Length: 354
Image (cartoon, helix red, strand yellow):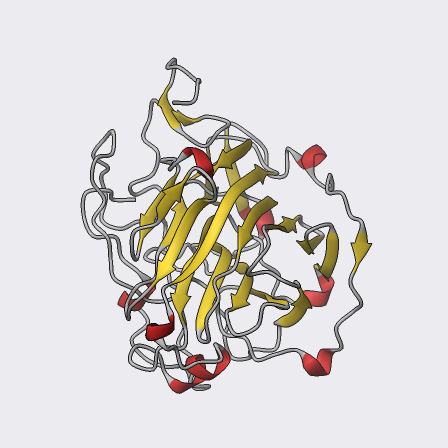
């Protein structure tokens, strides 16, 4: 991502409301379904990030300024219109597991989001609405297909604004699982997705935004977010203590072998797609939530993390090249690598946390 200039946000491309009145929150500068794009930097390993130790440069801020605390971790605070602070990974995973330990933000209209998003607009997410601390919404999209919004579910997540809870997305070629604490709340099989299964390399994004702000969102989004947002009752903060990310593939980077958008078309430089499959399925499950009836699935819009002010990135150890913030443009440069604690170091440099 281009660290020395303003980082584009979803608002730059989401200029019109969808037919349902819900604004699409996600977009892609270079979509491999339509053209040849730069390679995606692969994680190819597991990282365990403790945000109580401060920021790590494998996650880039935008939309506001996340703050760090040695007691709680990183906070994403919304206090006025246009704020949508988030962190986005420099790396991509091609199937994998993402575990985030966090508290959701309170407040009517305030949305806390954990999103896996690809350049083809495949998406898997958790979203918490600040008006209700008893549940979380789970959702998925494929290739930005938004003609219907019938894939979301409400799942139990009691006391999610007061307690640090670990939320897990476990994504394989066969199925996606969403976990809340030790409870499996939802499973989506490949065939159940009816041709809409997410299956291309994903970045990891998390942060907070105001879906209930009527000055920046259409009525459909405000209604979904259970707004309107009353900023006088804020500020509103989502807090993330830690994140563990495992890539189930190996290698240095991922490219698209054709324009099909299937996982079989993805190529790994120096590794193998799903080559770390032995790392899959290692989640401790203490319970399973009751199935959700299809007739109570909510109308959940495309996730992402909503529109917000852009942020200028400075002070990074190199000047990236390129024109946008996606794929190989502004990605980890040659000669650098990610350490197990999520930091960037030159190859041959120290791996000791600072």
